[in-house]
Length: 105
Image 1 (cartoon, helix red, strand yellow):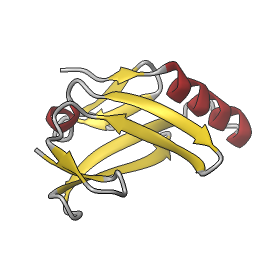
Image 2 (cartoon, rainbow, N blue to C red):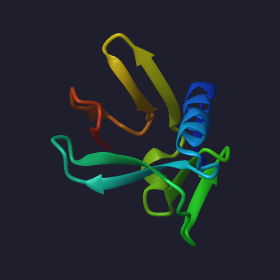
Image 3 (tube, rainbow, N blue to C red):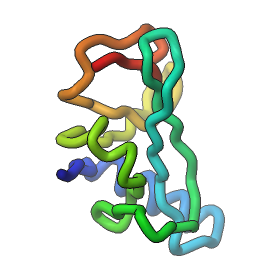
Image 4 (cartoon, rainbow, N blue to C red):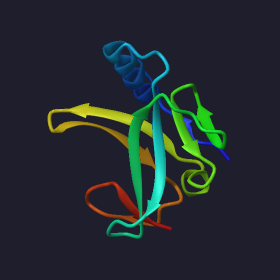
């Protein structure tokens, strides 16, 4: 199982490391039950890596429980006039909601 981290996401994480003076910052992605479609993504910047965590491209970390839900996904960063955000392009999601943080399998 794996996920791909787009260069846009890697670049943004590196920018955050420099801005915050924390060279080991990672984007943590967790999948939790809830949201309007059944599951929801939780994303945060962290330096903490736990025993059962899996790290991808020295930029993104997830836990062994969340990984099957995002297996094969691509993590991107979008920055435009409306705002900026990390985006998860998840091939496992059969449907999602308008906010982009909730999905169903």
